[in-house]
Amino acid sequence: MGEYHLRSHKYTDLTNYEIEKYLEHNDIILIPVGNCETHAGYPVDSEFVIAEGYAHMMAEKLNAIYLPDVVYFNPGGTQIGRGTIHVSMSASFQYTKELAHSLLNQGFKRQIWLPSHVPTTDFLIAMLTEFFDETKVPMLFFDPMAYFRNIGIVPPMSFDPNAPKPKTPSGKEVNPFDDVMLAGYKLAGRLDAVPAKGEVDFPEAEQPEGFFPEWFPEYRLLGQCCSFMAAPAPYYYAHPDEHIGPPIAWYTREELEEHAATGIEYMQDLMDRGRLDELMTALSHLQEYEAEIVKKHYDHLPKNKYSPVCPF
Image 1 (cartoon, rainbow, N blue to C red):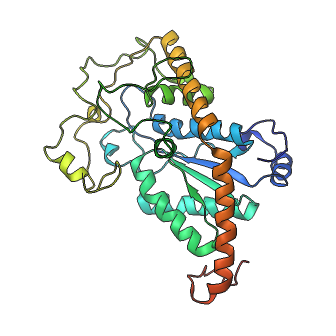
Image 2 (spheres, rainbow, N blue to C red; image 1 turned 30 degrees about the vertical axis):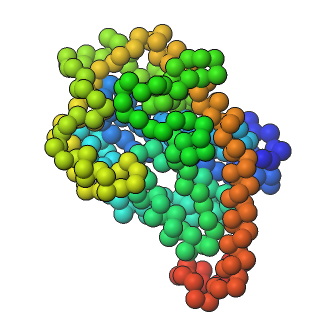
Image 3 (spheres, helix red, strand yellow; image 1 turned 135 degrees about the vertical axis):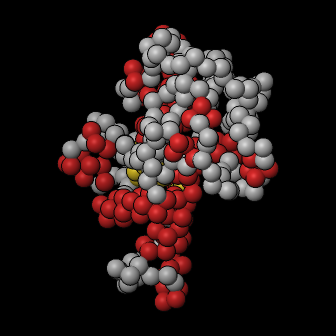
């Protein structure tokens, strides 16, 4: 996917000269979008780090660039934690759309937006739809684990602790949440930010049974109103411990390194089997196809009020 050698795949590591040279060969940019919220014994950007980790590895696989630190957005029900940063849905929508417009104007025509959290999914899909109406350029919403499940290279998501765990090519069992999260910190050079056992004086607490506590009697029934893991009826948690358990650091520093290495091996295998080159080609073909449709029907299609002339 492009012949230009990149000194780094991280956008903010590069000079303007390097970015402009890259754009002569490639138009892909990966944008992981996250949130900052209470998250048990992990740093508050831990769910964003998962998306950034996937973007990092995809960028390496595609010889592309990813945009870091797109992290402060709507968190959902975790606002009861005072470490959670809250940005409204409308502001989250508008800010990401401003980013999308800037990136398109710069020359990044194939934008891959990676969510890290349920509220992120909600505003990103709406943003990309409205962005298409304004620009007539389709971008891609890419949920890594949903994609890898849908093409059959990882098993369906399960919160059953007794369900078989996926394995790396070397045979190591993988926790697709914790190990991938730790891999994200390792890839970002920030694994030291994750507290190891005994490094933080967390209060004593017991892990609740099951992945989600029974914090509201009918929450499972309400959750059936969506086709994917979401919040069809908005809510707040009652206590921070209800979001992925109490603040316990499970691993020693050495174990953190081992789990991060397992997560990286697992993610690399997904990158190798994930048909990513085909996916990027498919997005290019969709953009070409839509450009022809827009030329034929532009008069009655939604307009960008700032640029009402057909862009093709």
